[in-house]
Image (tube, rainbow, N blue to C red; front, side, top):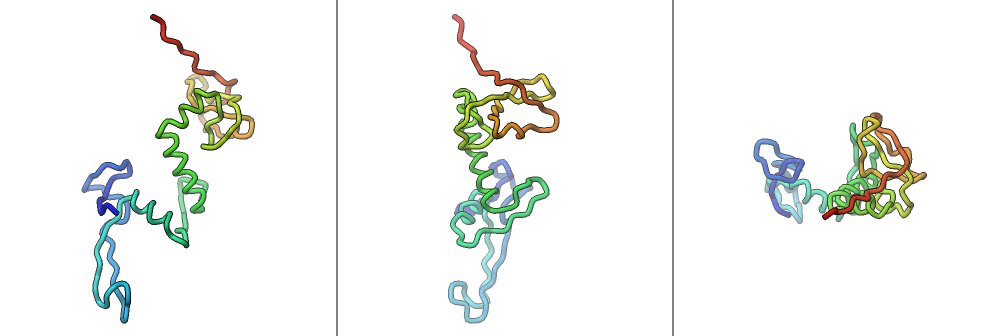
Length: 151
């Protein structure tokens, strides 16, 4: 565990700590693993917390005002999707003409999402996931990336 505190973007910033910041735990009477009347002060960054949660036999309870998924499994799936997207999987699925609404969708893309009805995105949807469209967006027939270098 790194003992660093970061902002939500993963960059260190001391005035806006994220993660478990300045936590304290004290060993109880006849405590074995934490010594009696000894207080441990520590911090965990978000990445270290995620790694710790993955190792837990009893997963944390999830509540969110932002996300609809409120189970650990849904949260972890959303996190893995974020990593897949940030590491180029989302873009590659679009280039391969595959649905990229979820990480492991094997279906061909049938729709392209348009933001504000005109802005073409790389969000590619199959029939199964065609409901993954935001309020200000619409689905149009799939628009592939056919750009070629002209010399």
